[in-house]
Length: 407
Image (cartoon, rainbow, N blue to C red; front, side, top):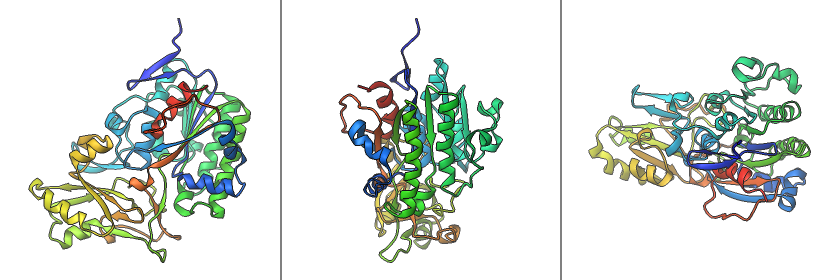
């Protein structure tokens, strides 16, 4: 007898009977959609309030790309899957490294387990940094828009992606990178009709353009057109985000930055505390590796209370938590975060030293994420769901809602 559901990371998921597409719109502050609806730019998204289900929930902390994408596809917090940033200090190697390697992943994904249960699964991500993690253990299609020209049947489950989508290879710093993801999703639904498909975009536009601006509305209008095509093909569509986005500037549009390492150095604590920024990844032009969440590694733990007090007194810092406090509150892996976790206010970002951040790529006022202010994200569906408890919803509930709660 064929099973009708699978259990992954202690959560049960019904096998899809209708092609189901889960979309993670990188950096999708809810106001982007609201403003695009006001501008009459997104008829498909506007229709969801009438014929679908419109909810919202929190993303996981830190509100960065890697932790949240992995939470969405595992249905679990970072304490379970292990990915707690884009970048961290590897205790075994005793050096700072990117968390792109699958060796850091501690839990199976729903995507891989669905494929193992006999379902056809496809994954398209904008940046290649996520491809290996999202595709870990997956017997199916998995490729990035960034390196779509290099996709092969052997490595990615599909070849000739450029020809099949009809779009040129996009620049990694462009709205075209996300459009390629959507175009590839439509192409796969027409040609492969996956049972489950995961599409993950880039937040290049959201870092550059505020909600309601022409560039932002144009981006959501583009997305809306592709989603409408998936809807017309009969797919169940579920939309969420990995994090929101906020301006990080003063009243004159200048970046509000607290350079934590400089503060520690000036206070004579530089030799005892090292600041690490988990937002750091290979693509920093649009945010300068500046976000609203930082960790501090302290050589002498006896200095922790004094260092925490020093940092907490800085204008722009919202909270300073110990390793244990942060792990418990945000469901983070205790062994992969610093001795202190620092959160900045909504309009402020955190840096290391001023001479280590290249801000030349910030051609518009700085917008970024990482803190508590970027936690609220949409949970949208093109079907009516059964009534569910909305309090405490998280973005990583999206797969469970889409697969288990259709009316």
